[in-house]
Length: 583
Image (cartoon, rainbow, N blue to C red):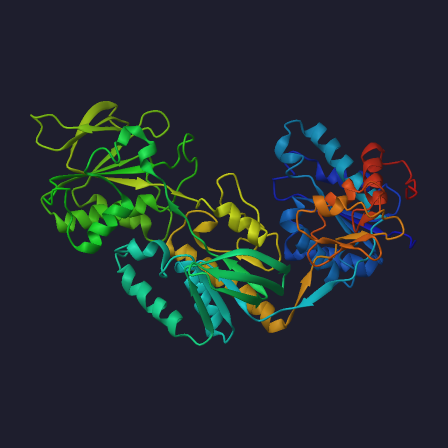
């Protein structure tokens, strides 16, 4: 094996690491280790100057192994691997030690944190000696794209890809396109017509020569891998068709929470308590009315119905606050003499122009009342004979500290957004993961917000989490750009840290096939051995740990590499490296 010449780079991460870890001491101690040629500390290793430092040292000192001690590999491992590539070094001759999330952020004793950081870096140094160069693997890309979901995000992605001259298959389970926006009147904060935004897009999709639209259609199974997927779709009339495509965009959206689960609000029992969607239908009809057809004198809007409540959904549905302000403006314009009460837990005006919208709304004679979302929800009851309204809302007003009664003839519930009941089925079909709230999980929330851990599968719009029209379209265009880049290249690189079967040792028990979460392993009956599809394999290691004969070797995570890393944790800086023989 080639003699290792290792470069060590310890990141300050501003004060994120340096405030709890003595990074200079870590670098000096690690420099004493065998095969370490140079050890440096730098304030921001991920910055361009930090990467240039690595590149220049590789060339000047003839380094052939690099260790960076910084943040989570999930955040910047690719950044540093690219630096190695730019210096002419195989990117897999790299190891990263996480001394931010695993050390600095979880400790309060600086001396002990520094010792732990040294241990983790030593482990990385010992391990990197046994890294092997791996060659990249690429596959051809079918230029067609499958898009699941015909809401605003799915339609925006469809048109962008189709307008670039590429084939798109658009699948929608309903009998019409548009998703939730079909029932929405105006946008916020500019109060533009949603239908004027939506209908031209729908017509363009129906008329576009590069788009094949399938309404009232579902997908049961998708097979293949990035660049080469296949599926069989079934319409609700029973027709089947096979499709082939290279990439997938999931844009299945969200649905409204059922507010009848919250007894306080009397939904489905009190006739003039309506959901935000039901109120939108009133607005589209042009008449705001009570059940008996009369105009309401007192209109109350209640926020966070099912949102930010651990009993229902702990997350914020994001669009509710601004939609409530939109309703307040629409009611004021339609019923100028009405009393309007905006009953909120927190006002979250997070987007461009939203705070200004809030300020403008507050000047239109709207009464804002605050309640405690966690401990004290308002209660709606039928009004008494002496009351000059249909309902009374009892609440403890948080700002004044007083218990008050709010008159109401019409109550609009700002209902939470939640995942569809079949969200798990879609996730299983396309091979992506979900969070505890049944939203689809992106590859990285900051650095890769539309890709997933399954190559070639992207998530856009509110299926990833509640969001407004602007953010949904932005994500759709981002995913479309990624796909068009892959199509224009014609080939796409895939991960090479995959499993490999030693056919001489494999006993043909097929345990690996049963445990593989990616369906990446098949069985060769003639040879009586398992075979790994390297394109489908994600290198999770499940098969290697389950194999009773040790026939499966996971590239970049061999027994030698893992055991050497454990040894490194237990050694001191002056101990010499002991070569661990392969089992």
